[in-house]
Amino acid sequence: MKDINVDGYGIKIMLPKAISHLVKLHSVSNITANILKQEMLSLGGDVAVARGALTGQTRKTDCLLMGTLSQFNRLHDKLARQPFGLNGLARELSSTLDRYQQDNFILSLGKYRLNLARRPQIMGVINVTPDSFSGDGLYQNSRFTVDSSQYIIDFAQQMVRDGADIIDIGGESSRPNALPVTLKEELARVIPVIKTLARKITVPISIDTHKPEVARAALDNGAAIINDITGLRNSRMIKLAAQHRCGVVIMHMRGMPQTMQIDPKYDSLIDDIIVYLDTAIRKALDGGVQFDKIIVDPGIGFGKTKEHNLGILKYLSDLKVLGRPIMVGPSRKSFIGKILHVEPQERTFGTVSACVLAVKNGAKLVRVHDVRAVKQALSVLNAIDNA
Image 1: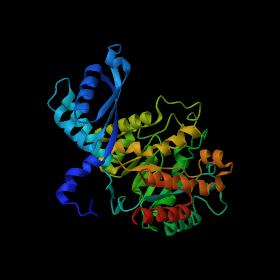
Image 2: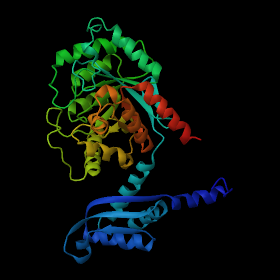
Image 3: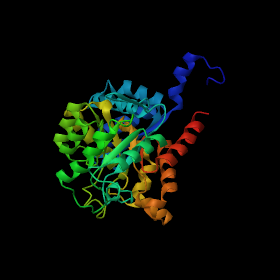
Image 4: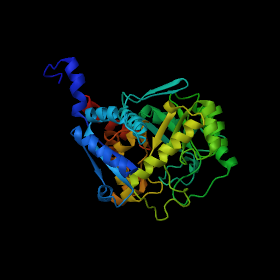
C-alpha cells in the first residue's frame, strides 16, 4: 500500500481487511455456536460447527471461526452486546488475536536485555553430564573436573564468539530413559561452572533444571533464566522465579524422561500443547511470575514421536496464540537421525534446516549445540526477510 502511495489513514482502515485468521473454540454450547455462525455470516465470514449442532443432536461443539481481522473486530462489537456469556467470549477473542499478533518481544533479565524483535536469539547448550544423548556431555572429558573447569569455560566462551546470545547449562541428562541425578551431584556439576562463567561472559546464563534447589543456587551465582523441562510443575519453582524476577522457559513434556517415550499419544497435538502451556502460564502468573519474563517451548523430543516433532515444526505458528516468545530445541534430536539415518554428531545440517523453518514459523529463540552453523543460517534468513 505504501509503494502505491495509499493514504496513511486508508492503510489503517484497510490493513485489517487483508489479514485473515482461523480461530478454533473448544466445546461451546449449540446456542453460542449458532449465534456465532449467524453473526459471522452477516459480516461476510463464516463458522464451521459440528453437523449435530445444527440439527440439535449434540449439546456442544467445537467451532472454527473464519474471517479477516476487520470482521473479527466487528464481531467483538456485536458479541459484547449479547447474552449467554458472549460478552466474555468477545473479550477472550479480542485478547487472543492481540496476543497472536504480538511480535515485539523484549526480554529484560537484570543487566541483560534481549531484543527478540530485531532477530532470533540463539541459546548455546552446555551439558555438564556424562550421558548426554547428543554425545557432547563435557563431564566425561578428561580435561574437565568439578574443581578445574577451564575446559568448559573455554568451550562456553567460544560459543559466545560463535554467536550464542544465551548459554544454557545443565547437569542432568533429560534424554529418554535417563537416570535421575542426586541434588548433591547436580549442584557439584553446574554451580562451579556458573559461578566462574558469570564473570567471564557478557551474555545471560540459563540453568537447565527442574530442581528448585539447583535453580536457586544458579540464580544466586549469576544465572538469569530458569529452563525447566517440567514446565514449572513444582510450585516452589514458581515461587523462586517470582522472587528473583528472572526469565523462565516453560516447556511441554509428556510425563518425565523415564516414561515420556512410552507410546506417546495426543488427542490433537498442537491443541494439547497449547492447553498445557496456557495452563502452566496461568499457574505461573498466579504465583507471581511476570508475564513478560515467560518463554514457551513445545518440547520437541519430549514425549513425542518423529511425526509429532515434524508436526510441531510445521504448525509452530499456532503457538503464537499464547502471546509469548517461542523457543524450540530441535538440535541433534532423534527425529533428525531417523530422517537422515545419521548419529547425533552428524545431525548439524538437519538441525540447521529445522531451526530455519522454526524461525520462519514464529520461533524467537533456538536452543542448539552447533551455534556457529545455526548463526550463519539465521543471518542469511534475516537478511532475506529484511531485503
